[in-house]
Length: 193
Picture 1 (tube, rainbow, N blue to C red):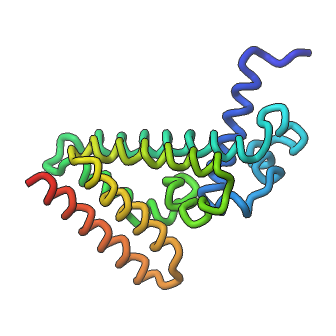
Picture 2: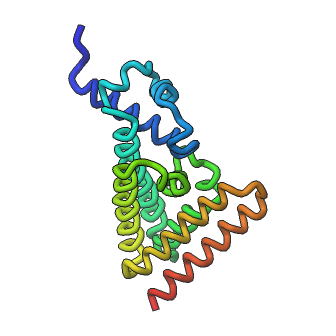
Picture 3: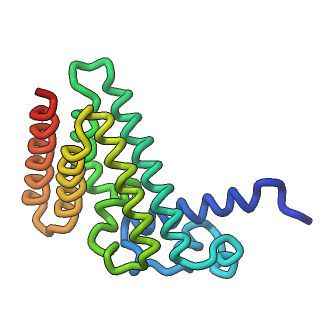
């Protein structure tokens, strides 16, 4: 009996979603294809009917994950539209929060992969670069700032989360997020004046 129309696309999305969760939590190199397929409720054997290799999966997952992060941050901004706070401040507060730090499986993939991306294939690095640029454009547009200032803002945001997740001291981790939030807001405020 043949599969219903759209089945292959639906399965592919499940695989990418499973990979996004796994890569956000454990990076790329520490995750096996069987682990990803199991997370999607599938067997390892079916992987190659959807992807040529793991690199292709990583590239598509980066694109998917940044799209999810942008959508999530846009919802945060939209939810705070009617408050006295500019939307970018709500985004900064959420991105540099203990909640985002602690829920890496659904958080931004940029801090999760930043430490290992330079050691992966050139194609993956190119994809990561494009997705980082897409994220910078989103943040820059939301903040209403110049691109160069957006580079600094995103660097503080991504770097603060990466460091806060890496350290073993919870107070130090919280302080990194707190300081990152303060500095990110200062950048936006200075650029607005």
